[in-house]
Length: 113
Image 1 (tube, helix red, strand yellow):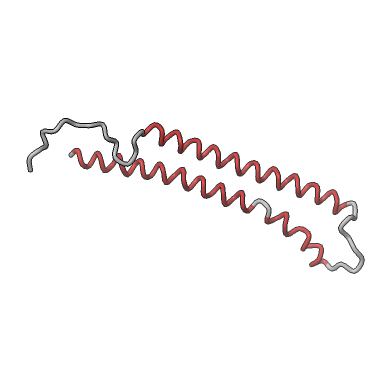
Image 2 (cartoon, rainbow, N blue to C red; image 1 turned 30 degrees about the vertical axis):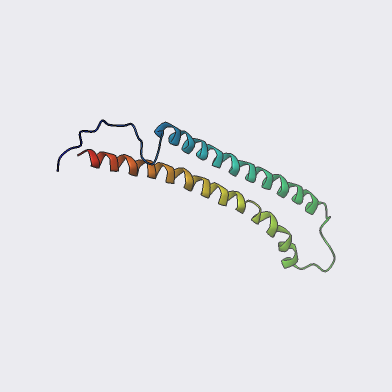
């Protein structure tokens, strides 16, 4: 096969600016940690408020069984789960961007040889 005599362009294929993709990836990773921190902080504050009210006897009624008492705690244990899901999805996006960038770099390197 003969090589092309056309002048090379700076077309970057899938990614137009490598530095911008790296910057977006870093920002996504930082944002993931911020979201996780906010969810954990609000869950901790909410659980602390509940424990103060529970310790003062506000939620206790005569004839309650142990299972009824455990039912009070369930929503507070489930509250940070959306934050964990957001964290996992943002980290997934961060690493997918890096993997796609590596795939393009490897493809370009292989095409040059």
